[in-house]
Image: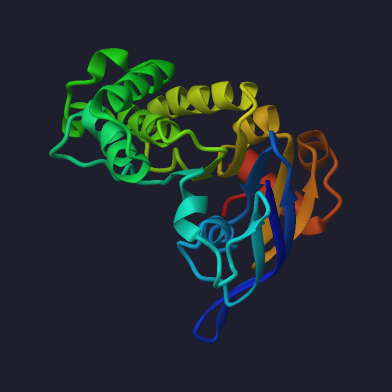
Length: 247
């Protein structure tokens, strides 16, 4: 589904990604963990060219999106992305937030787009809030609307950029529950997260990034149980036992 080869990204003379090689097969849930500033979100944003790589190649389903000949809009239609912030249209209802891109990008009729939107709002547990405005919802509900909006575009791949980081702690679980369901259904997912429990439980594999490189890549049991790299061990000790390992 995703193949990344020799990916570098710099801002001016500051390198952020320093040679990433990564493959994510169809149906896999890959969670990217690591300290702030390690390049996790930049990596994710490069995958659909919200950030333009300095060098390297990114291929999604046999389409090389870093090629100047690529029809990027066609590839992006197959990718759903959920950000830290919800990016909902405040003046539109929940239903219309899930309908507008279907109409404009996919050319669906209003009845078809509404049917698909309602199905996906039901998937995320918000069928009864279709007429509400975003401001009437909790943060967790808004993020679930954002997921339903992405799903309404029938994506083959879902990218999540720390989708729970802007939420109050008591709302995190409801968003992670939706993501668990997607993983169980076989959705291919690349997830940048600081939710270690989710990564351990749901991921097919975990990638630990630090200082712009993938330091370690393996199944959750190995990364969390017997990490090979000292940097991975140090990071996990800090995040899993913050009382005894203050930042």
